[in-house]
Image (cartoon, rainbow, N blue to C red):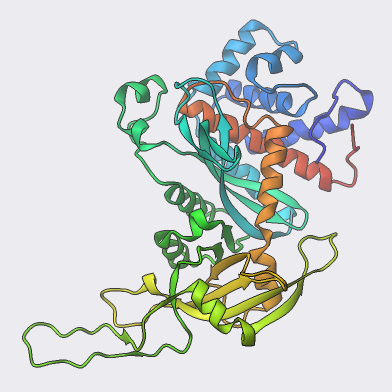
Length: 411
């Protein structure tokens, strides 16, 4: 994705006109003319050439006045507009164009100095690969054969922040914002996007999300498919497990109507090791539109997750796919996944979806390295969400530019 455009070149006039039209389309929901103007200016600053994309150097490069700086700063940090309006408008414009194959749920770190940025603390960040002083943002992205599209952003607020009234007030965190885990934030973003006019697709996520029982249950109840990584310690019932009604004794009380398994559950690591010799198979699958087919050995099994047992209804846990990638020559599988895709799903599709999550890392790299996703220096809760929404708009425009046959590729 070409993320910088030199609008001062005569050849870029058409590109600038397309940018203005696109921004006008996606910010139409903002109630005030000045808000729409500031949104357009900010997106232009994110896209144009330059170094750090924080507000002051961005407007300096655009040769804007100090009065405009004050206006844009207020628009970002304090103006009460809904960033979700822009993310939704952008998603509904871009997602249908990229050949959506999956929605990927993940989180990323935003390194910070000091203690005043909302949600900042010393915490583990996969981005940093260690514990560091940072914010954590949860997001969901549509990934497809022709590009990606962010579908939502949520700033993780640690418990110590949730309970600190003084810090909350200083960062202008609304009283309605309570502590939620990253999986809770993530599934809410997915449920929200599921109500938009965009192509639905299986939800992918790493163990931090796949190991969360409530998340998988909520996705399934919302009729959303998923292929989620899980830990080998996760317990399941093998396909041959029989669930039978318990014998009712002569004691008093209401009889137990829940069906009981004829064996104990086992970890998926144990199950895969037990069945791999007879059920492993090599699968060829594509991992992108221009890549050569990949080849790896997988084990596929139908299982029932032990923690999906309902304490009220008599039915056994729902059946789903257990997938493990176990390449030849390795001592143990590389990864395990649970999926609620239909029982007749093609194994090639299951393998491809399980391996497709890498695309979000490329997305984060582009959003941060080229569009300044992690350059926001404000210290307000609204400012962080406003900034991520406007970065999403810039990203969406560049995605459409790459797909536009008339667009001139500028260095």
